[in-house]
Length: 396
Image (cartoon, rainbow, N blue to C red; front, side, top):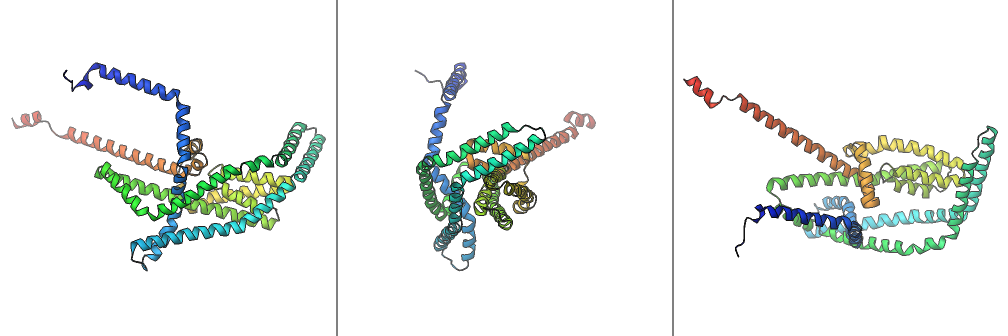
């Protein structure tokens, strides 16, 4: 039996490929939940690896500082890299221990005081809303439904906090699991930092084999540009959160507003998330303060609006520079897609990925425009050249 080597040109081949593609597409569409669950399980399985990569990426700028500082004193490359990694890890651990010693006791004390006095805070707030109800009644305004719903919500909240403490304690297993994954990720990050040059060289060799020379140069330039955007954004975003938290703590301390450390930590952490983070932090802080004294919440919200305005128009542009030069629509789309696909991490990295997509779009448009200009120029040049027949006629 002779095998037809040109079977791809036969009519039946195209129909067979189309039928098989339709079957595969049908199987994929009907089993999307199973595939998605499998992907989530796989991501959960390898999440410590991603955690280690993220930690190593965050610590890499500090590693570069120690590397450049020690490069003049130590000429042995292996010893230089090992000592830089050691100093980077020690610095990170000491900074983390210092923060824990400074913040955790005050946060625990604030939380315990808040939970112990939750019934008193709820009763005070209910009294406030009752006074507001009477004041509105004097102006023939009925807000009874609003005040009743708020009072019921506060009553349910205070009762749930005290009666469901056992449920909150039962979540310690999942928290412990996350902490264990974080420890594994940190250990992996140390290995990633130590083997950084070997890993990067291995990836470079791989892409040099896969890609052509021109494509490889373009890819490396693209990778370097993306790395600059991500590193700059992550570093300055953390610095911006710390600055906002310190300013908020100073204001609350001067104004005599309680729970300054607890609320400032919440504000600083939520400030890391773009767009919606400051709103969430301000809402949580105002909710805590309104239970103690509504005027505390009012002054806190006023200061939060002022602080976020200064942060958005002064601090962030000074820190990020051109990194934030992204249209608002790109940021919103990135927030929605990143949050849906990757949760909190997708929200935190929405702006740098939006910046990467934005410069890719502009580079592509520039390339296509230049290509079209070159083609138009070649066409016009060909039209200006005399044809052979015209030359022959001229010679005759």
